[in-house]
Image (cartoon, rainbow, N blue to C red):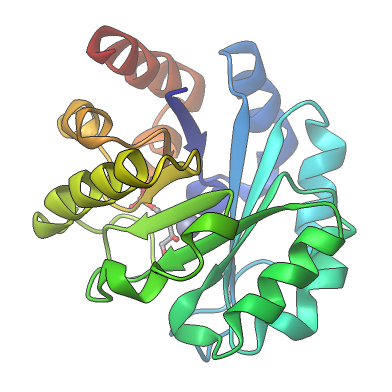
Length: 220
Ligand code: DX5
Ligand code: ZN
């Protein structure tokens, strides 16, 4: 599986439903929602209300919810009730990762862990057998429209090797600074689910999505 998950962080919120429906027509299967609390990251964005609205607008799209918040365990239930496919929790934000992954699973949602660019893969060693998705940040989280940090490419490759060596089947997701120029390399390094915010929503979202998908399909 190699899919693009458009991040609504860069959407036009006055036309969110309209833009999401156009993306569905262009073949969108996943939609990425960035939840920021102004503490774990220096920005405040979306809460469960918008997740519910996204699900109402495009119920067929699988929603992957990226929690960039402190104490994520306090909010699993409320976000799980918005019917996401995956909830990702930052390893840096949660000392009791095992417990929180258990909470996500118990709510019937797929478990995801996120690492910041500077956090080493060994942080994940113990939980790799129990995660459904690993999201590697390729920018410092907090804002859309930043540039891909080059050393993250090699990190995707190392995670891909760890997955193969361990016989695991978790999704490798990548988030931040994805463009038409680097999406092929990111996919070739082993990413399955590629988050793109500004590259999709800047200009004409459906046209951009189709172009990125074409590049991705040629990469396979
Ligand atoms: C950044 C967010 C990303 C962001 C990506 O903290 O997690 O999902 O929307 O935006 P682009 O694709 O513009 O880097
Ligand atoms: Zn994100």
